[in-house]
Image 1 (cartoon, rainbow, N blue to C red):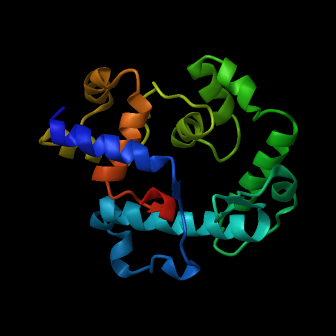
Image 2: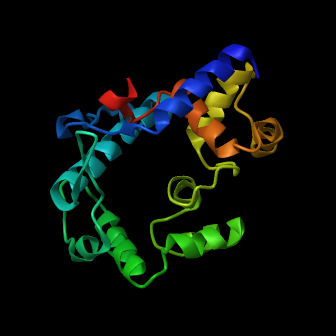
Length: 216
């Protein structure tokens, strides 16, 4: 990995500790005739969709979650399980998303999302346990491993934007398959997850991410 890329990754790792999302509901991406085309399902479309998801999460946190103050910054926590099980509707949540949030709330209250229990399990067992919950697939389960279980040396193979970031970082002619990604990631040990996060943040648009003032 080149020195300039290493420098960017180090800088990103320093900033990731102070990241928060702060968007307005007016940032919702607009639907258009092009949005259903094959081209619109590319990286730009994924960034816009991620911004919209970030807006929804931000709104849920502001309206239904607890508020905490850290070094003068007001932060909004995602709603707890007691709030999730009572949720019946919320603007911007379509399809079965509310049902999935209800399910997650019930699972948390039943102890199925206990972080210490999940952290003590083998990676494959923890991922399988998470994927048994409605609405959580390969990507979601790996995201939980990253954000909640401190899995610093695991590779999030289901993150589509990571493949594009790796292609850019290594100058590949096309996005790598999982086997090639795993081969390249051997040099990222023992921080494969953090390197993956930083690559995506710096080279794949950093979708939905904004820095707090503390991040500089």
